Image (cartoon, rainbow, N blue to C red; front, side, top):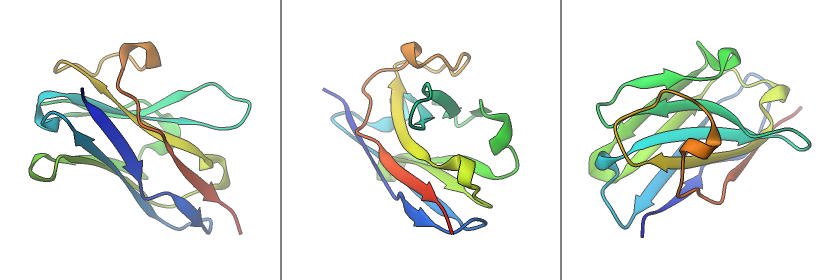
Length: 125
């Protein structure tokens, strides 16, 4: 019943910024924890961050610390991933997904469901 859709990806120069959005439908996003993941070609899906229903953020990705910020806007039913100082190694498809309870411990993708279709982020000169 719950669906999410990612947007905001695109081509950006190294050092640039993007803000990704995860828009939920079917149920209010405020009842869920939301995870951001990314997957580069030939690599496994890895967790980026998770924001729980109490608006607490867990950063899964060491390389994103100080550059990536996750926020939520329950009124807009949207979670955001602000990415600054982007590097070529950030190139990947970025996904959001839901957990049905107020819990972000553990970045295993198997803990999440209701995956979106992903949005492509390409960092290149």
